[in-house]
Image 1 (cartoon, rainbow, N blue to C red):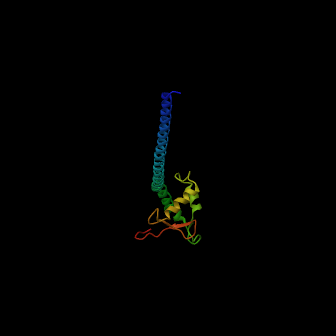
Image 2: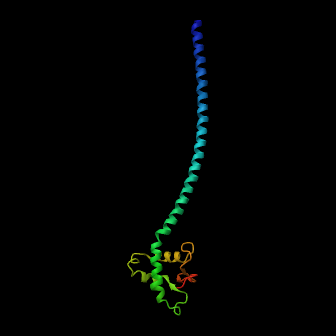
Image 3: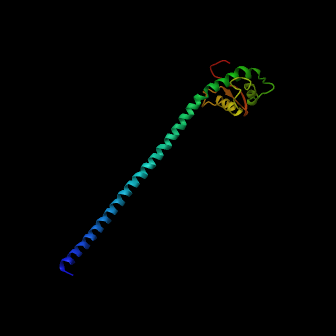
Length: 158
């Protein structure tokens, strides 16, 4: 083999070795960059999950407030029916605990607004009327579960 061919062959080997080293360096750099971006993305995912959870909680709280308003008309109808019809017919001697919600529900079924209402919805509205978190002051009171009377409201006459 001539000297020129050997030099050319050795040069080619050194070029291949240099190319191999540059490729390995590029792979190492890309792995480091990928690790950085993966770590950054995981931080972003955690932050987004935290914000999403907070948004869901806020949305649920807003839904509760909107539901509070949503049932205001139905609560008003249930209360007026209780006050004007059911409570007027209550005999404390026969039922000292109050008026049982099921009996009042049967009377409400005869009304146009209560004809399509189910018993659970009716009782929920009564419980809301007796809950100071929903109606402050509460308009109904109960001593025994399921039995309700009109609340003694301070500063008003009934």
